Image (tube, rainbow, N blue to C red; front, side, top):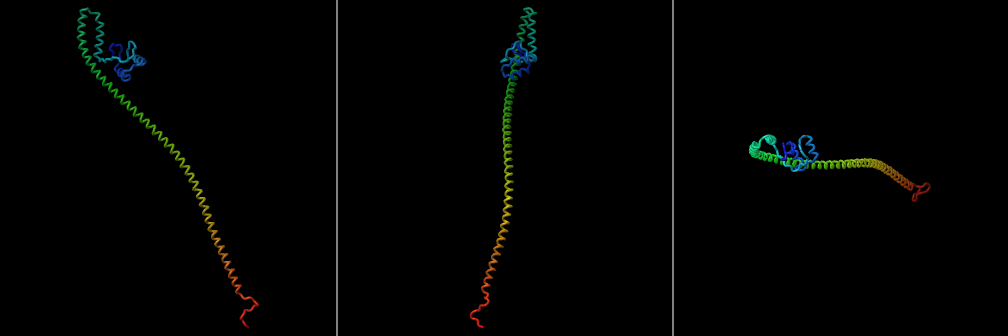
Length: 233
């Protein structure tokens, strides 16, 4: 159990750790105090802000001692002044020894508490580092996703361009095939024309040669009724 020095507030150990972890010495809000009071984990006579409180940790023995002191203060009224003096002397002696032991125990608990606080601080530091790492990984993932989306868009555009070029290539191939077919027809026709032309030229040349031969023969043939000079009967 954890009490303030004036014993006006009472917290469980768990609530004390929760107080240290969540507030770090800052003020707890009224709503949080009301929640703790409603849950029965916090007893407050009045409702001051829990800021910079002097808290002490009490073990079961110390709690029993505190209860004994309270019972003793109530029993004082039933004793005489003499008995009261003896009891007060004994109580002072007992409290002196017990306070020394309590102080030693308090120091040990304070050391443990400091260690716990340090551990919580290291845990918070590790948590902050982990959170930063997660944020960096999330940012990196977003960058990767954006890059993938950009590449997918670029790939779609390139695929469309390739499809367009393939269509143009197909059209050009068909046009080239048609042109080649026409060229082959023209070449075949020209070859036939050249052959026909050569045949005509040969016929013309032959006719010319035949005409020339006939002309020469006609010239060399004697004319009827004429005599050839130098011939005698």
